[in-house]
Image 1 (cartoon, rainbow over the protein chains, first blue to last red):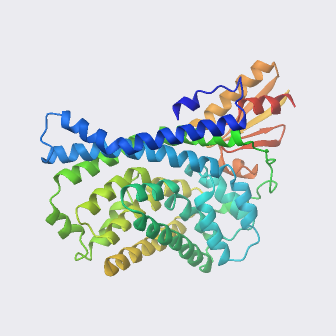
Image 2: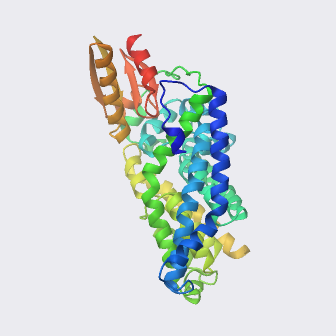
Image 3: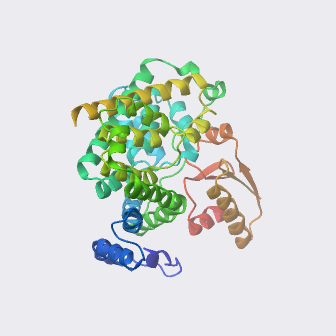
Length: 351
Length: 78
């Protein structure tokens, strides 16, 4: 990818040139990705540690997962950057305005996955939605789905844990966003917005002219998101994989089965509570999930932990405090946490 | 004299956008006054839903992400 990113706009590459370069990069990516297990084993074999010792296991996990996660992330973030260039908060707002609750909650949750969204603009986006007449509950469906069900979470789950877990996560993540938003809508809590939010009337509905994007523009926006996301998450990934590696190498299996196994009912609420103050994103938490599952932790407990870490974060609540009264934030957290608990218990009962 | 506002709560990209606007105006020799708007109410009232946003003489020209340098020069000289 870095080869492409040094492209200067002075001599613009034609669209076919971009497509060809992207294709070559994808082939190279696949060739390197296939060699990763062998490369990491070779690396660990050169280190002066016994391969099957605790330290050896932890190092093998670390040196395999770091390049693997980084490569998966580069691929997905690039592809999603291109896909997302077809969506914008303005278009999403136009699609949701005037729709009835219910179906609109479903659409909002779906668009939450696809619309480019950064938590630093959660507040203007929230106001933009509400002032355009989009019901509060529908806005919440969007705001819950956007961070929780994202492409990074899904692809990393497929790559590290398995596609069936990824599919389950997708289904239940969307379900929580839809149901929680719908419940908040039913409760009619518009009075619990901060006063200034209700008085505001945002500017024209579609202020930014839709700039016609060319294919190279879209590729470039893919590269931009790779650069941006990596700058933001690389440290979290290394930390997450480091913790995952420690769990993988050192935590005894019977301890894990006792604490996070399906027999321990209290482990689900404990996982949700632990997840709230933890602030990381999907990329950081999934290596931990991988290691926990590998040690025999129950799927429901682990999913509850993951959803809680990603969807209920303290920094986001502090941002939302500017537009929501504390009571409404409490209701939001309560409803989402109940949904996550339900998913956790359901899975532990089923599997 | 063009009146330019850069909308953003204070993330790194918003500061970069402000620098880009100043640099582009200086390069083109256009006289501008650049104001950084970080108040959430003011950002929302301007119709900006994704930051950083840029408005020139009251008209919103860009929202979300760093602006493309070539396009930025186009807006400024328009």
